[in-house]
Length: 315
Image (tube, rainbow, N blue to C red):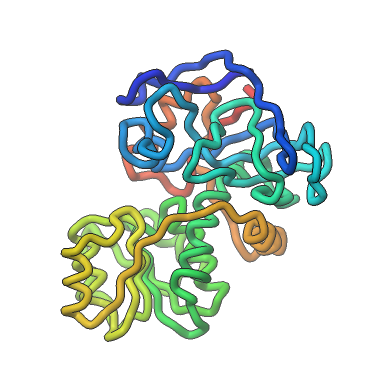
């Protein structure tokens, strides 16, 4: 099968198309013919030597965790899926799923039926970003109806889904984004959008129950602490929790929690229902052929995408 692999760490140029052995499903696993694979910031960070490279080990390895495709074979003990089912998932994370390839194998329960109203490209944009947003709001933060939440980078892959999930949970939702994305985010349900390029966030809002920081810079961390009410929660996604951040949060009387997403086929099933009912939309800015994975990485690294980038594995 074709796959995008790399033999060394480095820039996008280290990615290349190779012929590799097709995997075989073990008991409780399924073999999925991949139609599309989502591209996420963790992908290019891992390619460079950050992200999940420490988990994957030294190259060669195949990147990617977002998958949408069709079940071609089931292993012994699989009862939730059948051959021919259209599925989507984020298998194995943070271990290698090798999604930039024509086939993947993984436990059946790490997949869910693809939302019927989405193309494979749209469905491939959902798993990692959707599960990140979902698990932050429902598990890490236990967001409640009527609470006030700020989402940094609301126009990105995770951010635009977090806006919609938070609104669906009954929260008052504020996002930060460049001016060009404001009308779009308001149409997705955001109650307010702050232009971070022209407005200091800490002067534009406050008394918040939750801040979801999807940027992790020193600026966004400091802003987040300042706008939380006493006892409020900061979920720090890219940056995690350093001793310095914990000390700042304690001095301000707020809480801080790190976060890492995990596979969850059941949650993907719940997300699929919201999508099929028209309550959640997924934005795909551009789709690239599998062979152009390097170009997709260059685009992703700009940090200026609206929604998600996706690889079309069928071409």
